[in-house]
Length: 158
Image (cartoon, rainbow, N blue to C red; front, side, top):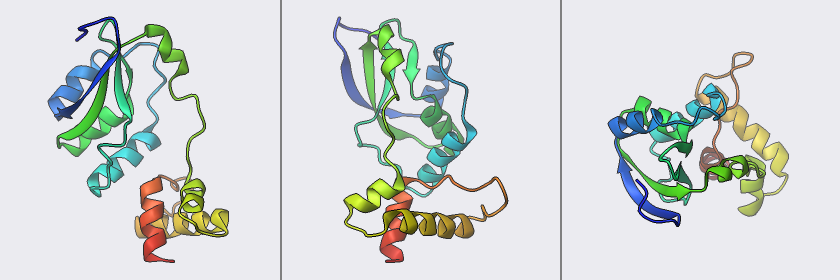
C-alpha cells in the first residue's frame, strides 16, 4: 500500500469485499465498535444521503494498518453496495492519537450555518420528527439523526 514516505490519498470505489478485507487490518488499539455510529452511517447510506466526496478519509498507517474508518466500512458491508471513499495511505502511526479528537459538528450547528433561528429547539424538534418517522420512539432508541437528515427535514418542515 505504501509508495513513498509521504501521505498520499486517492478516491477509491470501495466494494463490500474490499471493506471486509481492510477491516482485517484494523488496529488493535482502535476503540470498540459503537453500534449507534455504525447505524447512523448505515441509515444515511440506505437513504442515499451518504456524502462520498466530503473529504473524510479512510486512513492506513505506513504498515498498512487501518487507523480510521472502521464504522464506515462496517456500514458499507451491511448496506451491500460500493461507495467512493477518499483513502489516505502512509499516515504516521503516531497520528492515530490525534484522529477524531476535535469537536463534532452537530445538527444545531448545521441549522445555524444554514441561517435558521432557535437552532437548539429546532434541532430537537426535527430529531423528534425523524425518530417518529423512523419508528425510533422507544425509550433508549432515539438519536441516530445525521446532520444531512436534519438539513433535509429543515427544508421539509421550515
